[in-house]
Image (cartoon, rainbow, N blue to C red; front, side, top):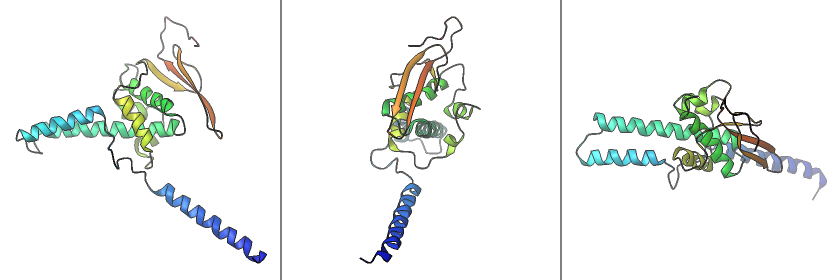
Amino acid sequence: MNHKYIYPLLIVIICVIFIALCVLIAIPSKAYEGDVIRTVKQDALHEAADALRAAGYAEDSAPIRALSAAWWAEQEALDIVARVVMGEAGSCPFDHQVAVAAVVVNRVNSDLFPNTVRDVVAQPMQYTTLYLSGFDTTPRICYEAAKVALDGTDGVPDDVIWQAEFPQGREIWWRSEVNTGWYASTTFFCRRPDNDLPMRIV
């Protein structure tokens, strides 16, 4: 091949690869294709609504509207927690992702924080509000981690409410070290503060 064509050909190949990558990034992930990811609470709400429909209740009846509102509130929580997992631990192992999701859910259940996922994530200096509406390409595995936490099957103690690159709170429950080859970090998952007990490194 004539050498004067090599560089233009390489440029064309690089441009094609770049365009293909841009297209792949722009296509939203299909988080709900195939087996749908739903929480246990959503399944229970759906079954309750179906039972009411079978009993003759109309879609616009107050009981079914209430169940539908609760179902969508749980869906919003699932979406937001999945985005938090992606943003905080998208390249981390699954057990780390589950711990990140559990911290959010534990905060909702703690008297130290607001009592909804949206309000917990919206708190200043804690997370980014991008998690409330961004990330159209949240991977399915992040939804799976969020589901585990929302279902309460994560195995993370209820008082683990801190996740940071430094110890805080009462004691360290888990120190997670991640090294992907191109990215390395240490994350501390810590228990809630207790004025009677000093910080303990474990």
